[in-house]
Amino acid sequence: MPVPYLPAAIEPFKWADRAAHVVADLPLASFPRLCEGLNDHEGVVQVRCRLERESEVRHVAWLRGTLETVVALTCQRCLEPLALPVSVTVDLALVHDEEDAERLSDDTDYLVVAEQGLVLAEILEDELLLAIPFIPAHESCELKVRTLEVSGEESRRENPFQVLAALNKPAAKE
Ligand SMILES: [Zn+2]
Image 1 (tube, rainbow, N blue to C red):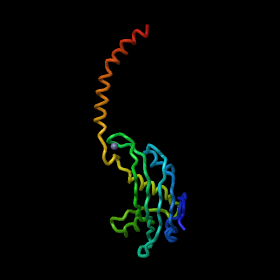
Image 2 (image 1 turned 180 degrees about the vertical axis):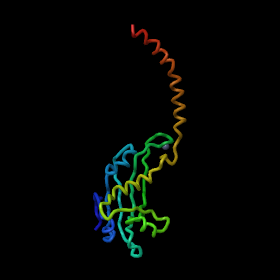
Image 3 (image 1 turned 135 degrees about the horizontal axis):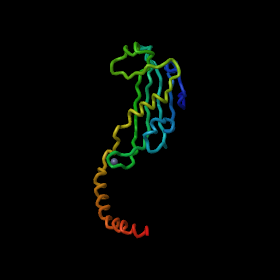
Image 4 (image 1 turned 135 degrees about the vertical axis):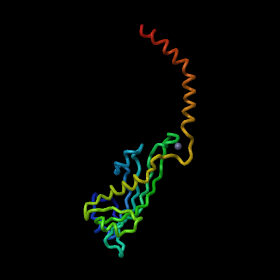
């Protein structure tokens, strides 16, 4: 039976022996470091993960699965809101120490973890953070610079009123 929530802390190697699944829709708000960079904390993260062993490498527990969510960012090109779908494939080897890690193939992502007290939420949050682009932008949108130029012209047109307002100020003081 899959676990329908994210436990506070787990024993990763025991969970892998049991081939434990986590199938949970978690509020975005339960990932505080991720939320720090978002405009909106509404929404859920769909967690579909499992811990498992591969019989040929007994010293490793594999954390595998997917994370799906939509995050509210600001497009760095047009400066309008950007609802960015984020889809992460997790494939992480959990090992007891660096010695075990050396036995993994070079391209394997791994994490040295303790026998117990593994906070799964933090690992998943790291994976989500890595998937957020450094400079988020719509796939196609107009550069905001053009709009800024237009508003620049508008403010120049408004200038005569600003001059009038400035002229009126001394009068208002008297
Ligand atoms: Zn944009």
